[in-house]
Image (tube, rainbow, N blue to C red; front, top):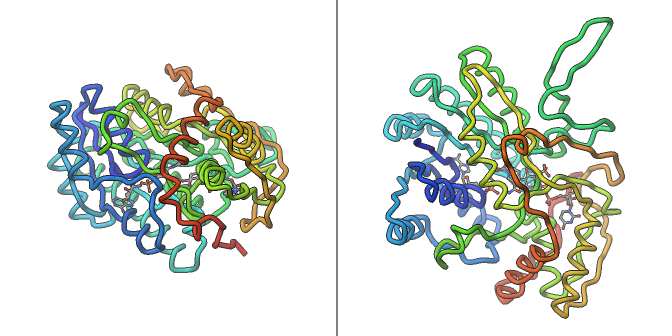
Length: 382
Ligand code: NAD
Ligand code: USQ
């Protein structure tokens, strides 16, 4: 089976490409390398030094004998995308190739427009290219749990059955996203759903929670395969940031009360979820939605876990509640369903102390590379 991984030079995409290649899938990577460019443009760098994509793939082939095809280009460039689909002829496309930071999308008008054009146009191009060149192909699209926001009712997987004035229908679950980035994912979801309805494409929207962890068995095989570990105020997610802050003796930056609750998953579960989804395609014309996370935590839960795990490293970790630079609920109900991937065979890893130990190991090992100017948040939603 041939799987094209769009965004295969990024955090989730790189680990997924190796995971699928190891399991015998024919893998192609399409990436514009724009994420490396965005890092440079805002002056940030991953904590872990990542190798150029060409060297990563060459070494993978040397070590395993498995080839990964590389297509360098931007999917908002339609001729590039068309020729990539024609040349690679995928059975499934896993689409990670978007701007994924909420703070980046909230810097100013330009970054909001960049995010929505990159994400919405890229996905819309992909839908047209699939319609024209590979209508049977399965689109596996990375959405986000943040599309739903934090409603005061249970969050279902994509759809909710509503009774209204004596009638009943199964409708898309209401969306209340919290940034222009999260909004771009909502726009994508609508466009994909529509393309499935009118053209009979088949797609799975994976509403993924926050991913943590650096290692998968494949990325651990060689120093050249090491994955990203973003910790800065724009691309760094809260847990990564807390681990790095603990390693350099900076108080943990809890925004507001820290009651903000989200879904989380280990990068080893991300790659497995993609494998499971690819192996179980929807029928033609179906738009399927899975919630892809394994556990729920509040920001304060995470900070307390990092504090406890840090103590075992001899780190004296302090928490600091800061004015929240985002506009979001800090105390709210949160109960999201996540049964579909489990029913297809996902066996989740937990964010136990041992995993935190591994994250803290990376943070401590590379702490000399930390740019302290990147610790405090610089983007304000207001
Ligand atoms: P990342 O920034 O590490 O990787 C994204 C990759 O896509 C980069 O290599 C980038 O160069 C490429 N890309 C972006 N726009 C492109 C374009 N127009 N054409 C070609 N390539 C393009 O991001 P990630 O953390 O791996 O996230 C991957 C996907 O998963 C994103 O869609 C993100 O929204 C989603 N997601 C991520 C998380 C998370 O915690 N990391 C959680 C939920 C959902
Ligand atoms: N937060 C802090 N302190 C920090 C950083 C963040 O308290 O130093 C808080 C934020 O205010 C927020 C929560 O932690 O309430 C999560 O923020 P985050 O930066 O860890 O994650 P988020 O912005 O939600 O985005 C990340 C990925 C994005 C993905 C999303 C999944 O960057 O690509 O879509 O997680 S979800 O949250 O389910 O939407």
